Image (cartoon, rainbow over all chains, first blue to last red; front, side):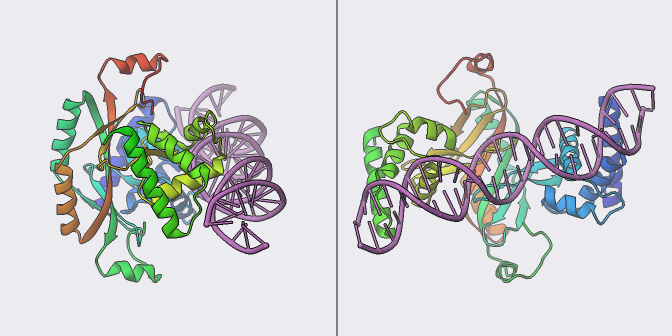
Length: 164
Length: 164
DNA sequence: TTGATTGCAAACCGTTTGCAACGCC
DNA sequence: GGCGTTGCAAACGGTTTGCAATCAA
């Protein structure tokens, strides 16, 4: 499924969700969805807010937060809190058609990488059964330092694809 | 290693750390350490602040935060951000003599359970190698619903041992 | 028309900070 | 005695909320 059709599918899903819930199909909501699905990074609310201001539908911060919550409710975005320091703000990513994955957070350059490991599924099942717990979702974050060449470069101020 | 000797060890470690760093061995710091090591739950700063006010050394919020940071620096407490809702505050737990573990967070009763799974270590190693990443630490949180009898009871307002 | 949604700014809440008083070294 | 630490309250930053204006239904 390529990019544009992924957005089409997301848009259809949002439309269906809004109608089902009796919510309005405002242009702001679809504009935000479009921006979210044009991105491949883990952005925060402020970054999304600023990105929207270069677009046809600049929106307020309140609408950004409200809409992100709507998109989360209907499974179109995932929200993360990559703690481990004083970085307190939430980060978001599109979720349609992407399986849940773990994250690597570099404590130097703050870039985020993703990974999948099938063994995690076994852990969820084993632990859930052993501790009488019905697991809905999970968050696995590995903190450390990326050892590829971009990292040092980033610390000196150059830009790259998936900052923080 | 039983409880009191665990605190003794922690106290010795803190003392050593403070001296090494040229920091002062204030009574507040040791009082907070004592409270932290008398607990077996995942508490937040506010809970610790209130707990200290029943003790010989009531301390200010500023001191709570400052000291928790000191204890974290010397490896005596771990800090967590159990997101997945609007719960934005950090939670802490003693760490001396306890290996890193995963957490199960019940979305109903907000209780936190712990678990260890050796397979997680393999994931860290595999992923770290594959993605050129030196893993320092990790956070694995499973969200869902605990199915034991306490859960419903808690939702009706009764108290228990490890309220989130 | 009309009630949900938006935008703005003020409120909120966990956490941090500035500064005077305190107390360990 | 000097300077790190504490306590207080005010500031901070991300997020939420109240309310009037707007707009989809």
